[in-house]
Image (cartoon, rainbow, N blue to C red; front, side, top):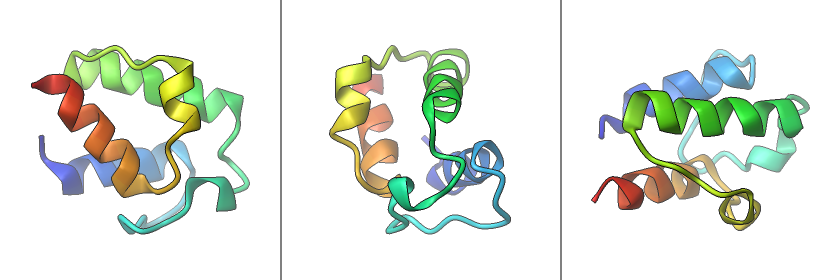
Length: 74
């Protein structure tokens, strides 16, 4: 998985210019149920993985989310 590309796509979902791996997702105003659904759709369509809502709840940072998607790819 290309993590810089993933962070860029996540930044688009969160409607920000740039996103750092250590960025805390809950700190973004746009991190809401619609953003979570967009992330689930991105993970499925782009990376071929299914993420459950319970797994998203344990994610804190953008890096945590990228690691979750990457782990599911294996």
